[in-house]
Length: 188
Image (cartoon, rainbow, N blue to C red; front, side):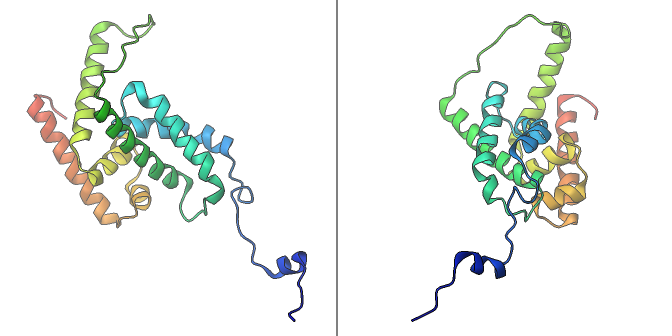
């Protein structure tokens, strides 16, 4: 017959497992710190303006559900970006399936005049179209390095690619963007 080991005795020698709580990760803190990053990345990945709030909520529902299993093998921002990519991909597929035009919520505001709004909308549509035409690898670099203005070493780490690969992708996507601007008749 094998001797019984009481539970407290068994835990004394067991290695300490880091949990999100023991590492100081708190959902509210993550939400407060990273919500703007998540929202901008979703927008950069082509999520429709009308669906941004829902997509951001979906990201943080996933974060809340999976925070306890986050092992800290990557930075929180890297982990979040992976979730953002998946949610954005699902949103784009869903929007394509529904093929619905977004609702136009014309609300009075103190924003710039119609000309400035039209120019901003035209520029945003151009960038959104450009991003939509990119393959996933270039889209990731464009969103993180150009739109989010993160350094290439951080981008390479987030995407788990060699530093030179990240630089090469950045050069290629910048050249494509310049060509797209030139075709549009604008200078970079």
